[in-house]
Image (cartoon, rainbow, N blue to C red; front, top):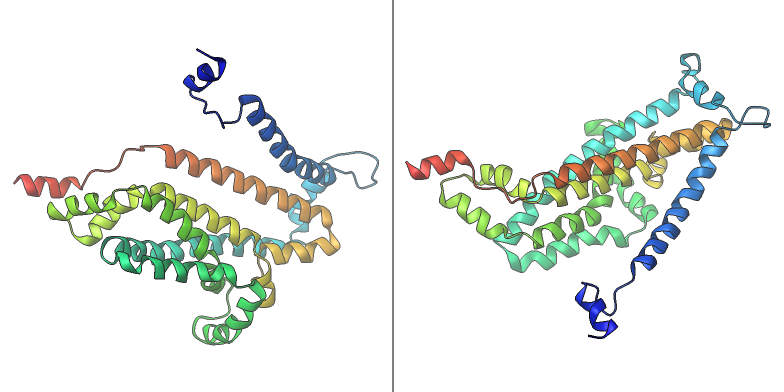
Length: 287
């Protein structure tokens, strides 16, 4: 057998990259991300006199005596965390049932739903804000002008990414068979959605939630033009007086996103088997 045949028989196709090439690509990609992060860490550890490195700026950020100076920053972080949760819940609650309904009952409308969900990605943020400004004048009168109301605008912005994340998992799942089995055993549509559909699409839902959190924590244009205090707007303001604090908070946000990604990956990998129909309905069928 030739060398090419032996290489192919070992599981690597003729066009596949070698392990050395894959490792080299990973190293290059790692450096692209590691170099700016290392520069941010070095900058945050720079001493006040610029002659060395210490934890002075980190300790100053955690000092309660500096709470008044960083009040706006704390408010921005709090608002962004609340926005991330509200936006994720809003997007998933509205998007997932619509996608499941179209997938199971109205497959001809799948193209229409896809078009509607992907339209926001083609609209620049500044144009989106111009269209949302009159809407938010009404929202402010009805719901107040709290930062959490930005979840309505963020939900539109995140919709294309959340749709793709859920759709990729939906296409790989035999959801029709699962739902028909659940309905045959007497389960209601609500219990089928909660006990069968959601566990089946867990990876897609987690991916959509993570993308939502990442977009909300990094969004600046909408919150700035609508005069809301979020993480990014507060970072811009605090960087004018204390650039070290802005860099430190940016590093903490990156660490939070990394930890969240790891946790979601762990949760998504637990129990990869597709769920069975609810046990209560099974007992009802047997009876």
